[in-house]
Image 1 (cartoon, rainbow, N blue to C red):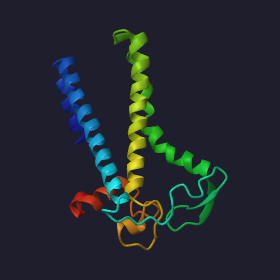
Image 2 (image 1 turned 135 degrees about the vertical axis):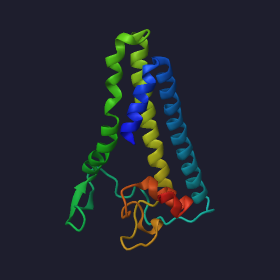
Image 3 (image 1 turned 90 degrees about the vertical axis):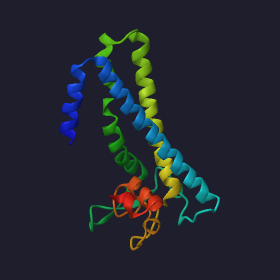
Image 4 (image 1 turned 45 degrees about the horizontal axis):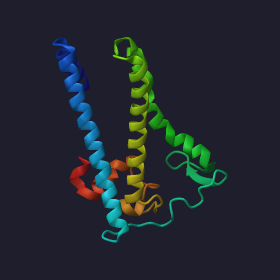
Amino acid sequence: MGIAVVFLLAFVNIFGVRLGSLIQNVFTTAKGLSLAALICWVLRLGAMERRGRRTSVRTQPFWKNASWSSLHPVQVGVGGPTVLVSSLVILAVVQVGSLFSADAWNNITFTAGEVKNPRRNIPLSLVLGTGFVLTAFLLASVAYLLVLPLHGDPNGTKVLARGIQYAAEDRVVRRRWSRSLGAWALR
């Protein structure tokens, strides 16, 4: 499917840059608006849970034991040994995915020769693009932490009982959707 989309977009670009940029703008706007809608919806659900309209299993406050020098037990692999690691190591490990996905932030500099007023627009696009991605990641993370408990029970049978710590999958978004929309959201 991915190869077909690449060929389709390459074919569209044969007809001109304007049509290609229009399609790119439509898809980018759709992605941004759907991510914003998801964040707003999950934040709203989190606020409803805090007001008591929905129940949430919170076993510990999020910031408990969150100093730089504290050690946290982490299981190495599935069924592997449990080791103690510092908060700095955990922070470094969890940033790998977001940094890898945001690796292309500087690619705008390659197009500097084709941009109108590059002295103004290149730094502006770097700051706005990076700021948008960081804000989206931060808000999505806060939203998921509001609606799913961080700590849970490894033997729990439901999403809330297992929490983020013992999730059956590493995909918190998928767990959130399954909790809100039911089993059909997992397909």
